[in-house]
Image 1 (tube, helix red, strand yellow):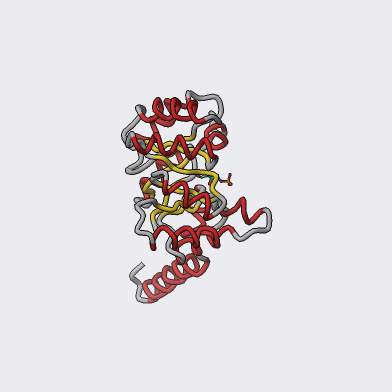
Image 2 (tube, protein in one colour):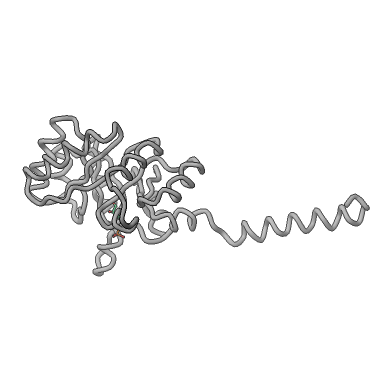
Amino acid sequence: MKIFLDTANIEHIRHGVRMGVVAGVTTNPTILSREGKVDYQKLVKEICSMVPGPVSTEVLSQDGEGMVAEARDMAKWAENIVIKIPATLEGLEATSVLSGENIKVNFTLCFTLNQAVLGAAAGAAFISPFVGRLDDIGEDGMEVVADIVEYLDSSESRTQVIAASIRHPQHCLMAARIGAHIATVPYEVLLAMMKHPLTDSGIERFRDDWRRVMAREGLL
Ligand code: E4P
């Protein structure tokens, strides 16, 4: 499973890239707005130049024509840009037009297998089921991801699933188990994925044992 970072924070992206584990980035209007008063186009271009993979940015229009026009413009920003289009009827039409022009689409705000089936049929490069938001309303977000992964794999589709709206490491664990192609994770979740108290206490113990023996032998 590839790891994308779900953020527009340059420092966090820089750290993730340095760790060698970040294969892409996803943003949305909320995520971009968290970076405050900045030139969003400049910010997205900077992210694109830092990341060795796809960077998703989202259209704001709700009508098909507007989405296509916005997407065509954004597609010129960088080679690795991917356009997030919402899973609506208008979005479906836009996805189909853009895919026909070889503009990569991330079919976002996806909550059902049916939406994913149609998004993939329209040529979306990625489908983003929102796990956390489904869990929030008492549904099983990961079950939707599992259904979509199974469907796409069995139909030998080239569309990839991005498990999105990831809230905690347990979501990543489940996404990996069910074979999601990608999980897009907030920076805090990425850090938490590596954390284990036994690793920390193990390091402490090795260091203490080493020091004790070295001191006893007079080597310290
Ligand atoms: C990613 O593509 C989504 O925009 C993001 O994961 C949404 O996460 P949220 O539900 O925590 O806002």
